[in-house]
Structure formats: C-alpha cells, structure tokens
Length: 134
Image (cartoon, rainbow, N blue to C red; front, top):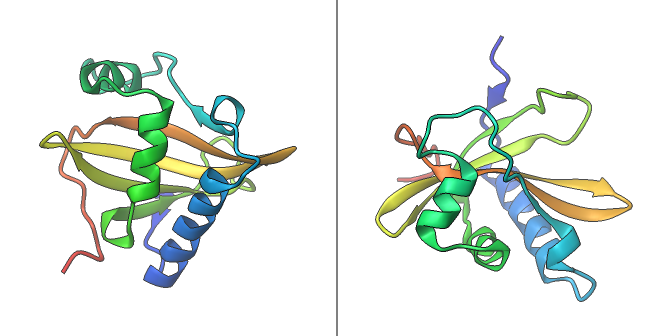
C-alpha cells in the first residue's frame, strides 16, 4: 500500500504558512527548532543529506532560507510517517539549487514547542513530479 497522496493546493499553502510562521517566530532558535537528519541512513552514495549539504556548502541557516522560499509549485506529495502514522505527515518538495534538483521532505512536529523536522534534504535521484506546476 502506498503511503503518499496529493493534497489540495490550499492545504499545501496552509502547511507552508505554518512552516514560515514557525521559522520566523521571535522564539525560533535554529539550534533547537530546526532538526535536520544528518546521520548516514540508507541511501545512494552522493544523494545523502550530509553529502548534499557539504557539496552545496549549506548549513541550517541555508536550509531555513530554502524552506522559507518553498511554494506550492515546489510541492510533490504528502507522505504518512512510516514510523508512526498517527504523527503529522511529511510534505515532499523539489527545489532547484545550483542547477540541481534537491529533494526536501519535512514536517512540523511538536515536542514541547513547534519544530520543523527535515528528514530529507539531498539531491534528487529521480525527477520530482510537481502537480501544481502549469
């Protein structure tokens, strides 16, 4: 059973507005409120988060700026959290950075205070479909 689906453009825009609200809040602390998975989890060499960040010369501030720049036209799909389907879903986006497409999978989670969890921020192995691109 596939765990991905396409949300309405209104739902995607609502999600992006919430992400921007969290990332721009006066209380936002990039050290604790933006969680980017850097551990070498499974994946194709050259397409892992840490490798992509090194190649791009990016840090969490750069990731925050990319997240702030996302639009509904960058959206690909919504994925149910495979670890716990009762948790908030991940949204998948594709963003061209330095002439390469980056696969971004993120969600807002609540652990005492709202945080943005970016589980994927790596070069895309395959072209990313974007249902709202005309």
